[in-house]
Length: 377
Ligand code: IPM
Ligand code: MN
Figure (cartoon, rainbow, N blue to C red):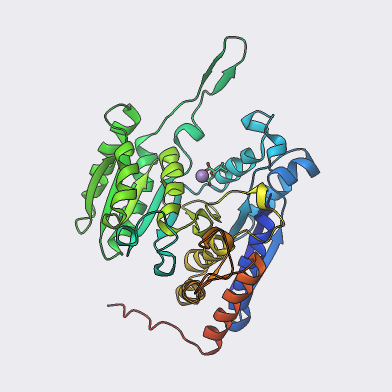
């Protein structure tokens, strides 16, 4: 297996966490005789500084030649004065659009070892395993027209969806749900107020007809925000439009214990785009406090969705679980403000966490601790 991976480290903690993702991917390549070629390319604030724009032409052109793109984070407060179209985030939105992936998968799992980390009681989060499928190329993020008219003091954005855009992402959500034990899709909208949501609900209901084994329910986004915190275990695949998914997936970091734990994969376009859900966290750059687990779990998704290496993806995920069970914590997931001496807990830096997971993974790869493949009948 030869994979060319665009490495879009970006801003803030992006480079610090991405290197840990690269390390686990390289370990898998070395053990399996694969070649993963990484092509570092600028995006976001670093690209504005070096090339005057957040998505330089050669970054996009080269990424389009790759088999997958692995992104760290974008965003830098020093560009806060710029209009949205010139900020680092614009580079991310441009590359999402150009790569064409419309289905953004954001798994949120309640790790047993982190049960005491969530402000939610363990009996609420225990066993929660949610897969958000966020529509990524439509809605308010891309709808035209959009404008802030400083003269008149009026601004507008446009929330727009076509039936086709809803259908294609809904099909992916149902397809994924059909393969999961609970086989349930919760579609999120605001159909009591928005026409776009009424379209959303009607298209999703039609798509459901093609997936008789999957149960469909609809939830309004406001009450869904509560249900996620009060009964997260009741959900399986959660299908949302772009902005609702942005908000609810951050919220689900509470279930997992930290936003720093969440990975994502964007499928359906020319090149799959992989990025942790967290941002560039400029306040902790260089402190060793960044949690690399979101990026490492994102690397597992690269193997699952772009390399067909499901067993290796699972080994990475199991290594993360093992290291958490052993009590190792970055400061965002440590109890007591990251005090290293709490019983059963050892606070480590970004690089130490990466090395621990890498060690555990190397051990599993060497012992060929592969999960028994499921029998296909
Ligand atoms: C995310 C981020 C991005 C988004 C920003 C950085 C443009 O918050 O991936 O969730 O809003 O999609
Ligand atoms: Mn977000």
